[in-house]
Image 1 (tube, rainbow, N blue to C red):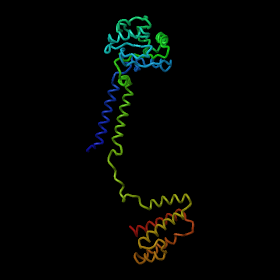
Image 2 (image 1 turned 180 degrees about the horizontal axis):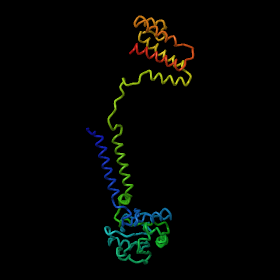
Image 3 (image 1 turned 90 degrees about the vertical axis):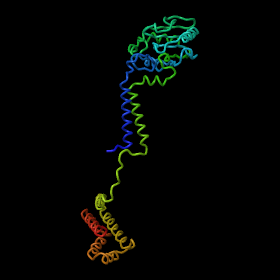
Image 4 (image 1 turned 30 degrees about the vertical axis):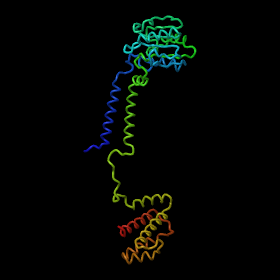
Length: 328
């Protein structure tokens, strides 16, 4: 059996979607990531604390995606959580941060190892107009550490003491390797279930766009005219409907009137031709028995008697029999 192009396209699209979904669901979970980013919902992530400050406590929080040499002016507090080795704090950044703190800024460093912090920022102290805070454990800010809310109290107190005046609180994401690309950070820390769902939705949209105004699969032929139900079955069903409305006489009248019209059309007679004229043409062109048979039916066209269901069906059968004989 030959496979159509549409079927091949859908098979390939489905295979790609399954492969990508498997790749996403098989990658390392965020819960195992050691990067303490505000985008991460893993155990070492900081998203819970970031949300707590901004949404619950009402602080003006945002992320820093650039080096310290480009520090915005409206920043009051900088929070740096465990910088990664792949993006170290350069000497130029250290000097820029030192000037920023001495001019009145507050830098808060949180790390399991103070050796990873730049020199001059490894102890809690005051620098001219500014302050440096150092926390030796990430549990004061991580998602897992916030299971005990008391871990975060010292950090919140330090932030509260230096965030007056509406100054922003920045969380350093630049030294987590995200730089200026917020999109990359969101993709990295989006859960694998969301990624797999996005792949499936995209695949469905592609299939929908590809199949616009098209039909997949073989086109079925229209039913053959010879396979249509006989006219009598339709007449009988309509008759039953009219019977429920106590309109058997009306049904019989419709059937006989339809017979009259077909007979007039066959003999090129006007639609209001008399019964005698129709019978006469049947006698001349068909035979005497058929003419008499049709005459009896035409006599019932305006009959005033009340017809039962059996009477109505009998008339319907007679009309069908006569029409089959005359018209095939």
